[in-house]
Image (tube, rainbow, N blue to C red; front, side, top):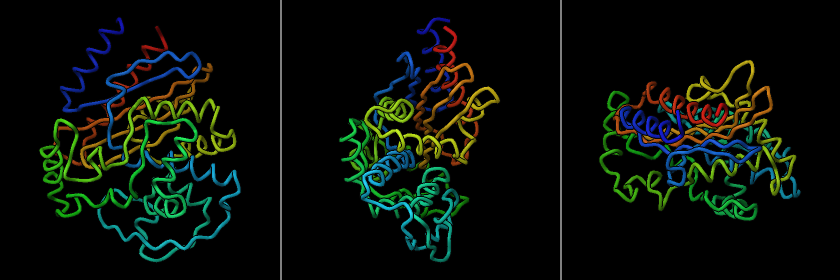
Amino acid sequence: MGMTTVLRAAREALDDGGLRGSFLVRDLDTGDEIGIDADLEFPVASLIKIPLAVATLERIARDELDPATQIVVQPGRIATPGPTGLSKFRHPATVALDDLLYLSTAISDGTAADALLALTPPAAVTAQLRRLGYGGITIRHLTRDLTETPAERFAPSETHLAHSLAIAAATPGQGQPVASLDISRANTGSARALVDLLQGLWRPTMIQPAVAARVRELMADSVQRHRLAPDFASDASRWSSKTGTLLNLRHEIGVVEHADGQTFAVAALTESRVPAAVQPAAEALMAQVARTLRDQLRWH
């Protein structure tokens, strides 16, 4: 199939599955890429934990922070499904800064991320990105703001109502009464901006090589393996990634390194029209579209 046919079929598949999507796949060595609405801006949810890791590690490399510093973290005490790690703790914990990076990035622990953001606030993370040459990602708020949505106000059996509200309230300009879903107030990025950052981590130029290597290691250790991983991980490939989820948004960014040396950065950002929290079909469809785009680059 030609590229035009592949892209048309992918768009139709997404629409049939109730998804609006922004995708980009790039060969990190040739620069060849294929995408769908790759410049569309989305709230990025937990994907900000990658820029946060970069900014924190850059400060460690400049001796502004000590990775061994012991930090007392108050328990998240979050009872709703989804959050992980310290976010679920019921008692204070003392954790080294370096270990907070692991919890935040590989475990997607929002409370650990906010402990890091207390040291390097959102505006400082954005400033670090700009210093490194990345202009398409903006960090504005803590991750605990992601747990202050309509979903937390309904009983678990009524979660679909929160999704219905989020879907119905969206404006054509991507405004939203839920701040973390409103692109003028949320942590935001595009598939292209996120792939650019992945390229900077796998093929470092401005990011310090040791910083890039540590972030790659943390992404390889990601425990969230249910979204794109089934279509990209194998005995002949290594999949390193980070997911982001917020109400009807489901995202993942990652890099697949094939045994033959080819390496592809992948960004898949999606928004669902289906009012349901658990959507395995949407996860599978995201992966199918991303893999189809990767196959188009790899084999043609």
